[in-house]
Amino acid sequence: MQNTAVPERTYSYRALDADGRACQGLVVAGDEASAIRDLVQQGLMPISVNAPNAPGSPTKSLARPSLGGGGRVSGADRVSLVQELATLLGAGISLAEALPSLAEAYAAHALGPSLAGLDRDVRAGQRFSEALARSQLGLPPYVVALAEAGEAGGELAGALRDAAVQMEHERRIGQELRNALVYPVVLVLSGVLAVLVIFIGVVPRFASLLKSSRADVPALSRAVIEAGLFVKQNLLAFGVGGTALVLITVVALSRPNVRAALFDSLSRAPVVGPWLLRLEIGRWTTVLGQLLANRVPIINALVLSAGALRLRRLRDDLAAAPRELERGRTLSDVLGGLDWFPPTRLNLVRVGERSGELPRMLAVLGAMETDAARTLQKRALALIEPAAILLIGGVIGFIMVAVMMAITSLNTVAL
Figure 1: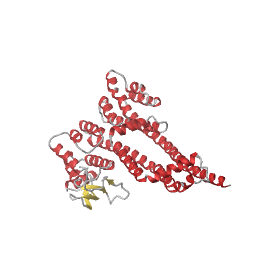
Figure 2 (figure 1 turned 90 degrees about the horizontal axis):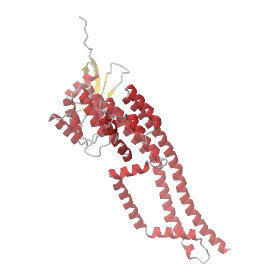
Figure 3 (figure 1 turned 30 degrees about the horizontal axis):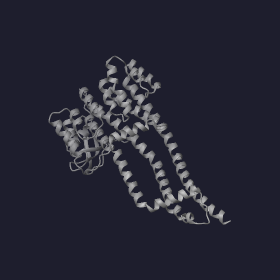
Figure 4 (figure 1 turned 135 degrees about the horizontal axis):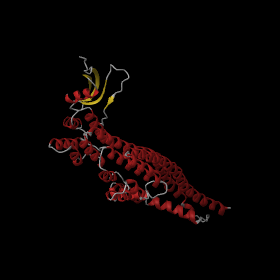
């Protein structure tokens, strides 16, 4: 009889023990999945596993967030958690083994208490998707929907992997935006500081011209110099008022309803509006496609995917879509009646409906809209920088012209 047993290989690994300390060593197993399973059974949380006796073989890496007691949970932490759970389940480790192991590994992390509560709820008999919805992990609603669909279809690992991909996609878009805004923000703040220095430190030095009998100071110059004197004399009050204004703005932006109203206002702006709109459409169609690909019914998928939208008017428009589908209309017909959905993209939806490949077509549409949003983002940022330079330069130039007019008036009278 031919021996069909899988030959065992020696894998090197890096892992965390129960106390969160890093360790490394070797483990003998038939494949990488078996090696990961053996390490988990030993109470270790694998970080990476690879075969040293197979040069050039890819390394199996498990993403890990930085451990630390308490603190703010970042989007990268949540992505890492979902990726890690998907990897463990994909390696054949049961949910009953993976959750306690993760809870123990994350005990010192800010996600630790929520993950421990998730583990308790599952061991108490709750379905994983129900326990995930009740947990305080702060995951997007579509992650719970994908987990529920994965449980129903026996593909929980794949569903969580899709969820992690979408979460990472959204995180990277946000990070790209924050990185791109660093230079314009620094430019604007530097310009404001320069204006304040000139207005407070330079302009008041010419106050003596206002009392000089030898100068016929123009009204414009008089107004600028008097304004500079007023600001300098009430500098403490202006400082307290400015600080209070910043604090009020920060507190207001921390409220979801204020942020939603701000996004809705920006979506109607000439330059920023089209960019935000394409970004939202790309996010929504991608999430909807992933939900449908994981066999979530289209009515439920529409409701859940609408939760991924930040623009209130888009959510309000989509709120009626499930009722329209129940009446027999197609998704392409419903989207065609919305003024914000690009008419040029409707054909992709129609082709997907006719061919039975709607999830794939929605994924393609999402990628196209996201790329279009990136292009519009670059254009918007390319306009912000010169606009800020022109505005700041104009203000400084206005102040200096007013000062020079005052000096010139003195010289004219003297002559």
